[in-house]
Length: 512
Image (cartoon, rainbow, N blue to C red; front, side, top):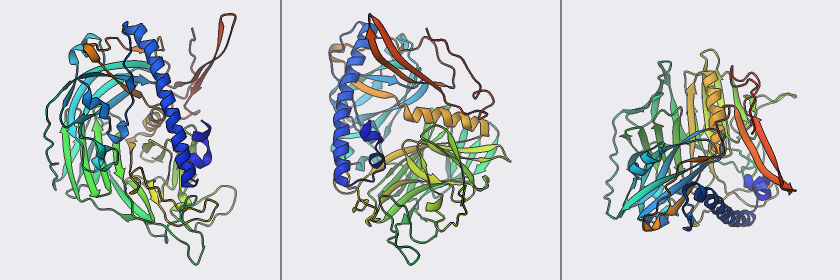
């Protein structure tokens, strides 16, 4: 925890040798955590199913579409734990080897009354396959499964595997206008593949909208200031807007309950825009890298139909929302000389802006700490990658030049969840999904040898669900004396006063 919370570790403002050491230490701790998780699963699952959980659990890098051990399993179970105090609809994405097919065991799922559904098997894009670790295997597809997981509960999903070759067809790239939709949104792209509008179905309103990628060129200093961009400082050349990256190819893909737009900008930028069944958000999943030198790479979400009058909100360590006003600092007279960098703020879980006249809110939940702001009205900009070869001369004496595990340059993959809603609905969305982004489900796989699946019903730590505004922070055993166990139990009300008409109210919970 000390390493994870150190201000120079989480921000990257350390020499590369220190960062490499921190990564190695965290990897070692991660392995210890996996072993402890196995012990926990053994204790809970064997009580629930009367099965000896002797097979080791496999933890995979699913964010990189990589899980090599699955290629050798005839049958396996995905064991999922939801650490959040609210229910989570998880869209599980399982890497599939090109010489196999994988299917959810529907009969067992129905027998145990598990709320899960197999959606589709889709091809991975060539851009995702360029991620260094994904290049090492033949997992060219992903199986998509939707599963609803109650709060603080375990689920085990059984899968079967067939050894047969799957032909991966080339992507059907198009130059035709298309759209994707679910119960809440319709997202439309033009003939170039750029989003041109989002329809809010709940209020029957069409919003002019655009999302793009762009980059600033890092400054090495000028006549106004010798300060260069670097590890500590974001300082682009001049005051011009960032240069946009154009889309080269795109296509729309539609499965029942799962629709997406795939965009290829260049050999180092790829994005998938998804609408999932009944989802309150639009998912933007991007893969960026390897960057050229002295590039500060951003994504921008903007609408000419929204006016936030220079006001936007960023979270404070995932808790209170901090009001920000463009080109202004409270407490002293401020002269803005850096219109982009001067309006950047830290985002831990997200950023939002409100058009109070129309009662509309644009909310974005991030999957990691990033920097961002509203550089002009109706727009939110978030930085997602940097590669700067100048030293900002603030103590580290190194440029920001992460090479990645293959030493060719860092490739990153991440996602943003965007919601366009009425303001009060937007607050509910932001609070719930910011919580889910921090308390992500823990997923492990178990080889079901000898046709021995984990036949057990979902198991929960809770007798009943908590009020929707309550989150459990800590359940920690402290001492045990005279057969009396003392436990530290902490809960939080994660809405601010007057933030929501009903969810900001005081609630009581019963602890048995």
